[in-house]
Length: 364
Image (cartoon, rainbow, N blue to C red; front, side, top):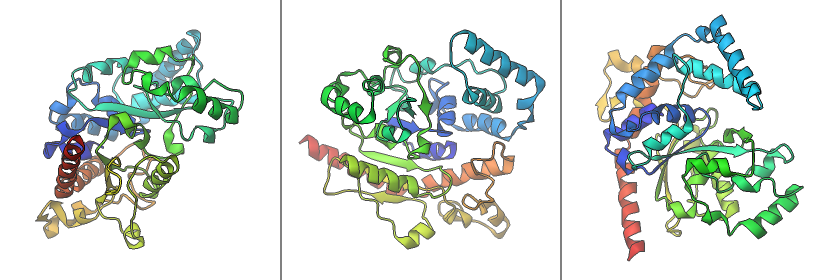
């Protein structure tokens, strides 16, 4: 994600972005960025250097006796305060140690200073609140942001899933637009005393749904895909989901030949539906970067090794199983994702200009 954002910054496009949505590991990057109230106004190289330091350091120290004591004491303190604790709480503490040199004192509410003046894109951390008396599949259509409570208060309304959906659509659908969005303190006013947040990657590995609320009027979506396995599966799944929900979204048509050898960027538009956003899909691939070190600049024979970045095979050093990168691999991944954005500047600018023209047409 750092490399992609760096590419957008080099193109002077970060100021054009209204929202940044993320789930799973992407939220770690977002959380670190939004600790700085003016991160998007600064050159991202400094943030990338800090991330490089944390990602490449040995993780053995995270299992030292001192760290284990810290984990234990922290979990015991939470239990005394009345919080339910589980393995995921322990894993969160381990991740904290892996990505920070000391205890991270930042809280979600601190991020208000990063959005109060609109100086950064609004972060949307996507998760699903799962209740024990409902099947996980029953919540596949329920998406929310930590900065939004528009669906948080409806999950305990009925005894069974069928009654749940009936009551929701009958009694609550008119209320959803009356809730103030993007106001962190409202989270404390939900009907639930506890949240059981599930990684949305277990359902559809994308953060699209909160972005397509009608009031947000999103014109262009840059889908920067970092998921493992099939690069097109999340896009196919979300397109099917939107079709079933009758939410305007462009048709996703990628040839079988392209699916076997994906390009760096695909543009999807729906001319028959002005409400549908334009989608620019950036799969995590190494295509022209093998031969070019920068857009239009071919590699010399001595530089060809730098273009060998394996992001697709089962032996890739960038799988989700890896918790530590070598400095060389970290640099290669950042350069690759940076390049993939820069090399498709024309497509991005063209999509933005089209969006501006469409919005002007709607306003007349």
